[in-house]
Length: 206
Image (cartoon, rainbow, N blue to C red; front, side):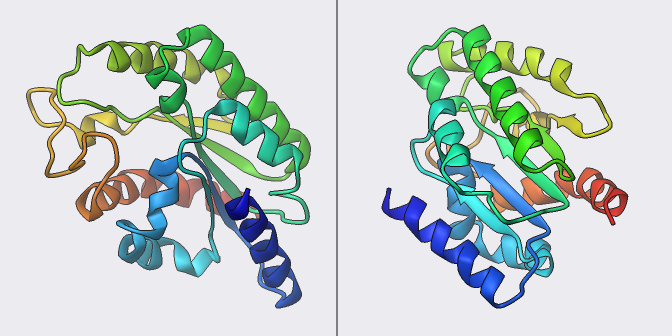
């Protein structure tokens, strides 16, 4: 709740300063930590958009939905919203189809509240060192459903997971030291892989 209130205040201040927010990121701790390990990369890629980080540590899909319904995107009209959520649902061994359905509901909420915004839906990042772990199997199944939510007009899907993995399909601590959260190198990979699609979407919205 303190971070929720902090973000509401941040949006109000930007509005008072007449700063247009052209880009918003929505997600869990992986998104939240753009403000920490990813700060230098964020500043280089996204400061020019007055980007807003709405990532919250430990969030699951239901938390994101609550935050959207309680003011976090009210009064803003970003060109693009980047959404990645679900790994904390998977960590609790939630059924993949249930998590995917919740992500679809979040997309619907965003479309209702931000009707002019393009939504870039990301595949859930890999976690744990080996591809066959139970949580990775759940995330992979969710990721296999997510492309069906993209209409390629307002909602777009992008999976950059291969760029985060080693050639043998394992996840390296050189990219995610705790095998969940990217370090600066991991955030650089994320930003670089997403940049072509993000630029294309940014140019679609006047």
